[in-house]
Length: 189
Image 1 (cartoon, rainbow, N blue to C red):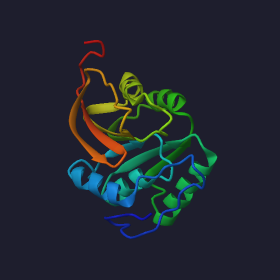
Image 2: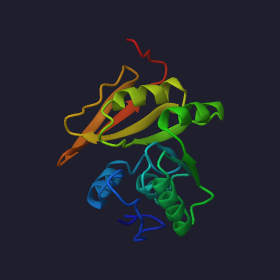
Image 3: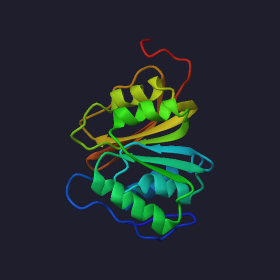
Image 4: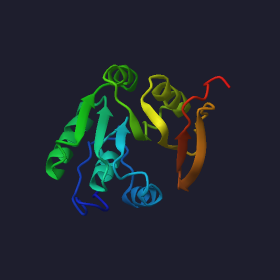
């Protein structure tokens, strides 16, 4: 696994050992960032199930101004720290060991807001639509923020009216949906 483009291009990343983390494959990440090329410069990124940190670190390499990388597994946090240090992104990256629900309240209390969110939970977590809603409920999204949701083909997210699907792409058993956040919409519409 490596950084595809930007200032850290070609640099190798490490991933946690075992089956709990499923890093996004290089060719999928390259395709994803080709789609996102206009979204990344100066973005504030939230990578909620960061694993190795590859998605947020790719964004930083391509010009994102900051990234919050969150995971609840210690092996993942150790890999993320090592990757951040090896790429010299300590000033741009905030690493948090927490479960996804607890961290949303913490980030909200700190006044954090994001323009680009990567949501790539373990495949056993099937309700990514709930996670999208909670991120919006906590006020963590800037108007027009983009949510990138990766999931297994059969677990299609059901998002509320605050999100508009811009695009979706399929890579084997993996599907990536791109949702634009529309501030001011009501969740129950």
